[in-house]
Length: 367
Image 1 (cartoon, rainbow, N blue to C red):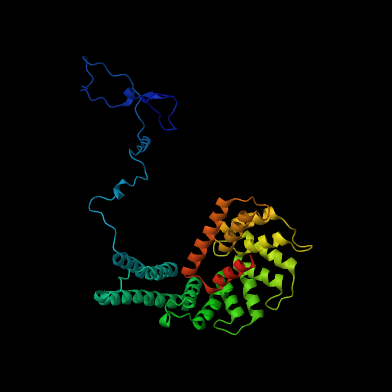
Image 2 (tube, helix red, strand yellow; image 1 turned 30 degrees about the vertical axis):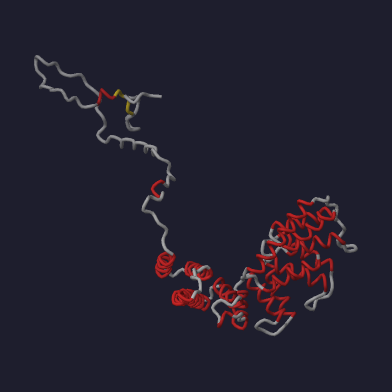
């Protein structure tokens, strides 16, 4: 590697590196050639068009690139108030025409209304309580109005979310469920390929919520949602095939197939197929499902981990009485019983869809 005292010339004249001191201009006085100063020897001169000097490499930063020290709160730091945060979010949402961002703002307002602070209702607090309730209702109205505009423009997520609000009594008269307004929006969103909307439209048709009770139409919506791997729709089709419901002929083999597909895509909202398959492997079905206690308890544990209360209760029984090959273990039994109690209490207190709550109760009774 050459020293920094050498500089390469352009390709046209480059034969060998020339020492830097040979072509740098001499700053010392240079008198004219005379008797006292002999003529200077021929010295190679740099080319007229010298190459662009190399750009020095950027120096490495002294501090980490992702240093967030400037964001650390100081003594005067304080979180933005709820109203200030909402104002900033509203201002940013108004600046954009992106329907997805406007939809997120509407969802934020609905979530904010659910946790809006309401002062305690005491005789000396009535005026403050009324103002707080009015502000909360204003949030819901603003969000509903924005969701309606987006839904009218064909935004599937807004159509589904608004329908879900109506189905849960949000933005409705006296907070009552309004399936007459929810069902048409579920159908619209389902036509735009929204899996959850297709599943909910199917439940409406099955139970006659906001429409006539039509099993054939419910099956169409469930199949549409199942094609998009919706675990709730696949579970409902599996139960229908297993028991011969919704106008379908009884076909345990097809029912188990749907249940297995649903179990593969189980979520905290739809863990039901795991529990149902566990019960099937506990008792077995001739030529369809074989008895396998170990696999059954494994499925129950998976469902319990997803927060399914009936599965936790069933495991509590297994470890209390030593059923299905489980050892008698009082500690584990109490653990699962407590889990069941907590999960079922939370489920009852939360804004859970009535169909899912009924399904939990049915599973608890069957187990």
